[in-house]
Image 1 (cartoon, rainbow, N blue to C red):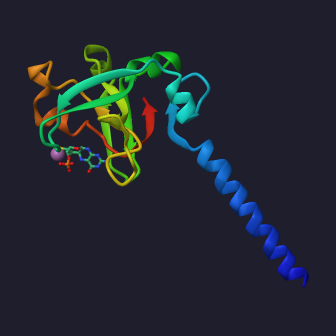
Image 2 (image 1 turned 180 degrees about the vertical axis):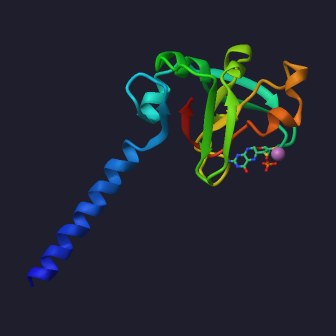
Amino acid sequence: MQTQAGAGLVGVLCVFAFTANAQNDVILRVSGQISGGTVSLDREAISALPSVQIITTTSVTDGKHSFTGFLMRDLLDRLDAEGETVTAIAVNDYVVDIPMADFYDYDVIVADSMDGVALSRADKGPLWIIYPRDEHEVLQDIRYDYRWVWQLSQLEVR
Ligand SMILES: Nc1nc2c(c(=O)[nH]1)N[C@H]1C(S)=C(S)[C@@H](COP(=O)(O)O)O[C@H]1N2
Ligand SMILES: [Mo]
């Protein structure tokens, strides 16, 4: 009897934790040389940053698409990020070092939606680094393509 009641309670707590998580889901962690050490951002924190749209072709989709998100430099500025490099880490363990200068030279965004639809984890989401490649010929290059990290989950400033 006691075991059953205990199991029931654990079940209820799990459901509760899952529901609470869905609302306050951390989608991006930022660590390294920022004020505050490590910061965890949920959708609400991310939507507090000014929204920016880029309409561009990509190397992995057909035609032009509209991406909405925040400027990487707005986030870095807000966190007092200092360094040369931002290491971007994806949920599939893809890791790439991006020169910090990219975000000040170009309006690189961290997109959470494409064509008005939230990016899902199953398809490049929850976050995808998007370069304004149609606006700058220099960005239309494999050297930049690999910095378009999809399924982004973590940034480390170094
Ligand atoms: N999360 C994640 N992002 C990634 C990659 C990856 O494997 N995982 N590949 C990168 C590379 S090497 C390129 S050229 C572009 C396009 O990769 P794709 O053609 O494999 O989609 O996305 C980049 N972003
Ligand atoms: Mo690549």
